[in-house]
Length: 290
Image (tube, rainbow, N blue to C red; front, side, top):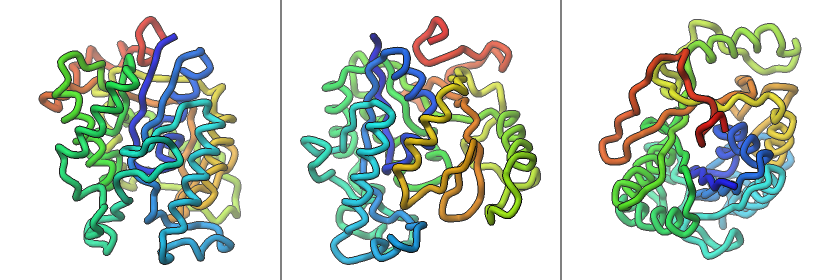
């Protein structure tokens, strides 16, 4: 049995960004842990019946999303941790920062503006306590530029650069050819009349979509998509789930393709490991096709 730690900013990120790898390794019998750094207090609520939670005094959305995270991680079959909390029922050290320029960004507990060394110290303590064989988090742009995602990347890098014997660090990346295929799949599979937009081939991609040669590892396991969808349904305030696709509050559909790309990162320099080419992409995160 091997041990993996996935580090994320908000509830739902674990299933959206790394759900395939998580489920793949859980089903192999590996010991999988998820560290979540905030409770997602600034999430945009989709269901009208829960709209009263968004922006309300006392942050009731935080406790609701705590419950969503518990449901999703139970479905995924992982151990769940909150950064700076003694247990999943405790209070995390930081709060969702929202986007740059928002009122939440100036909150005293805003994660993105917290002292980097302080955050890294908490991350390091978690990594050392779990002692994983690999650690997984976002790329330097946090997937799509969210400041909390970027802070997670920076804190994980800083923490692991300070460790004398750090495990390998992977970041999530999507090969451009996959992203093109996913948009074509959505255009041909999304039911008409859903009300959800399908990105056109000319629409810009998020920063995590990169040239194929930069993606050195892949977890490809379409068999886990059904459970990934089940886990996503726990995040009812944030995600609408279809068959093989999902949409967030922007009403733009994204595919659940049963595959995820990764690359090794040097924590000290931030450099990605060199690639031998997309044709030589390694399967899995633990070697030997795992």
